[in-house]
Image 1: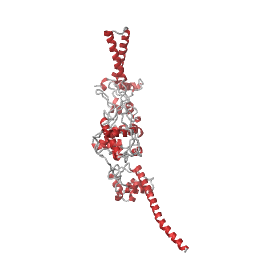
Image 2: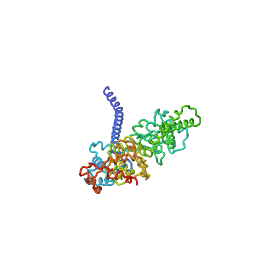
Image 3: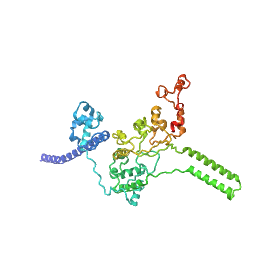
Image 4: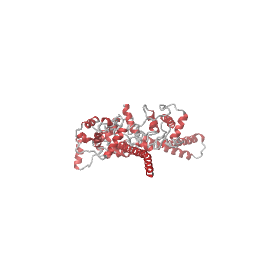
Length: 486
């Protein structure tokens, strides 16, 4: 009897244990699958997303939507590991893909394990785009907000009030509302407003709930705003788009000094000729002499600066950093300013030239996708980017980049400063006539073995005899007025 009772208890225990075991196994397998899927996602976002989207849209390489239905997974694994090995071996499918995508070779991934590749393929196969956020406010409204909505949005933007989720966020700490002479890689409040108000512009409701770049993901981590809060921030941005950035004005000290001295001279003259309240005429004389000295000095200084814009550093429509491109990435100046070798002007790069790199580089480490998307929008609109010219000589001055860059072999930095160290480019020299003349006086010419200068026989003879050691621009007519003014 005892034996049968023990068997019954064991059977009852098994009936309870089996479902529990199955449940725990399911949870464990689900967790493993989730981890593996996360691994595939991490690899894809790190190495693949720069060239591919899991959609029908082509980036650098083809869109990968339903690719596992079109391609064998074993073939995909070989192509991911070493695509050019398949192309060079004459694999028909690999050659077709290579030719269809501009013969741009896909980088090898020979360091990937079989499991790494399997997880990437599984992530692509099971990928589901995030569902569009359902909102409870009018997302199409971009103007006509009430004053209350604008004010609440302003307070939220500046972090003056707490959001519903208990978050206090000062958006203006990254997205400035004040004009500055330093390059802030984050888009300003005006940038955000204009991108949002543009046709088919930024969907703030989607972007603030699902960041579109790694930079935004890092900065907006934990940010949760309600539909109404985003709506109010939109109301504030609508107002910002009309008012623009706040410009900080500097104290006009020189102008104030000019006016004060003028006022004192006027009083001194009035008292000297009419009122005669001040007994000692030496006072009138001192005021008049001092005032005339100040006025004359300021007039001379300002007349010398007339038309000169040294240190001019305007905001550009795209936050392009020469320090990143010319400095860190070693991009040659003439790759972007491509006509400097045969034209008076150095030229400005077209959006299509920018796309040579930014088809692949779709987001910046500090600026995210926002600035690079301006290039895409320019391409879509068919319009050039309205760059602001910094270095400009008066119309009566002739200057040729080709003559200086090719014949004179002058480096860009000699006139434009160390642009490779500048985030925001500024005018380094005053570009005055004296500055140009001094350069012509000291700059040597590549004279020997240059057929262009064969006619200068006397100078060649002086070089051979040792009478002179070098030839400067001045010696070949570089200071003649008609060289630059005609």
